[in-house]
Structure formats: C-alpha cells, structure tokens
Amino acid sequence: MEAVGGVSQKMLTKTLRQMECDGLLTRTVFPIVPPHVEYQLTVLGSSLGQAFCGVWIWAETHRAEIERARAAFAQHIGHGQPWQTPRGCLL
Image (cartoon, rainbow, N blue to C red; front, side, top):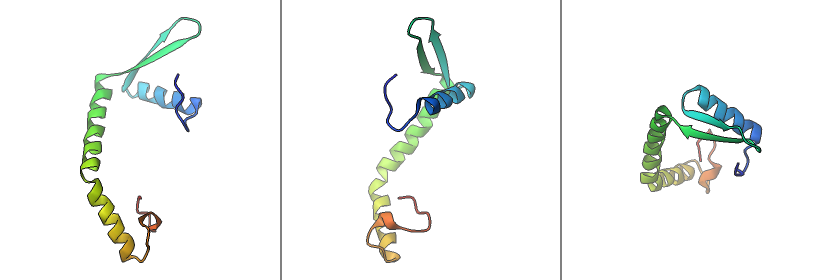
C-alpha cells in the first residue's frame, strides 16, 4: 500500500469496506505471502466518479469568480483577508 498523508490504515480500511458494502468497488484478496488486496471500481462506482468530475469542472470554471466574490465579501464586512471571513463562509 502506498502511503497517503494524514490517513490512518484503520480509517482507510473502514472507508474501503463501506464503499464495498455500498457496491462502489470490488475487493479481491490474493492468497499469497505477504497478503495482497486489490480494489476496482464497479459500474456504480464509476458513475459516481463521473458525477464528481462534473463538480470539479464547475469549480475550475468558476474559480476566479468565486475568489472575487470572497474578496468582495471580506471587504464588505471589513476584513482585509477573505480567509478571515466569519459566519461559516467556506474559504
């Protein structure tokens, strides 16, 4: 397994098992030493990837617009930096 920063083995395993339970991926265990496990997206899992790709494309398309809106909001409420915006604005 490749290291994924900030993700524990326990949490990764739990997440992968839940995704398997939800039908998003299949898990194949190879009976060798050391044990080897491979995961593959199902058709359902792949369709979810397509949905996320649409959100990613939208975010990239509108990134500059969002940054301008955040800066304008920060100026409106009297803060110089948009990341200091209060009231739960995701920055």
